[in-house]
Image (tube, rainbow, N blue to C red; front, side, top):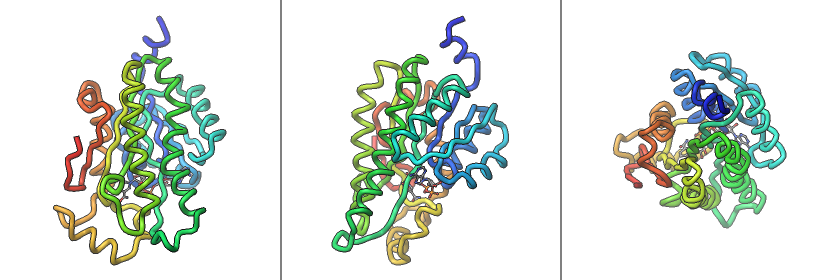
Length: 253
Ligand code: NAD
């Protein structure tokens, strides 16, 4: 039996960055319920371990403490995942940071850090996981962008630029990777109740809430099903290189 046949016979391996919290954790819980093999990556080792302990249903779970902005750490973590699980079938890039700072007050290090985590981090995990997906005969990549990457948000020029970058990156990589049967998409959620938005000002949150069709922020478990759809076969085939916008009031297809 070839290695591709071996891979087809066992549960898919799903590598999730930013898995310790919020949307990444909800995606991990949903894939666990499907019986997937999970490789959970985050810089927060303690919360990763707590997630691992509460997951039910996964065929196997490994945790990987990694800073997604660091090329050496990401390369090493992907190698560890492949050694342990035998490959990567699905990559979900959910690691992210967010601060609210008007441009005229923004220290350039804040800009650099946001671009490093929110954009370079997506590039790095794709850069090191994609060769293994190609070698394994295919895969799915789902990047968590943001509505702010389409519309922009005040006090969030750095974050909006990074997320717009993720959307452009996703569309370009989708073209490059599809011939290798690796399908790449992004989703662009509106505001979701997670620790990420805790740092936003009350004024920002109030104004945002008033724009939302449901009058409330989304919840991480409401985002996870879209990620699972895009990872599904054949459901995900419809959407190569697209950006879906759950909870944002937009359909971005
Ligand atoms: P969260 O803060 O709950 O989770 C983000 C996770 O990323 C955390 O566990 C954190 O430790 C990890 N992380 C941060 N920097 C990292 C680094 N350098 N290396 C490794 N891990 C790192 O936030 P969330 O809301 O679940 O965000 C998940 C993704 O969804 C992010 O990319 C975010 O930009 C995006 N998003 C969030 C919202 C929202 O309103 N919450 C809306 C649209 C998009």
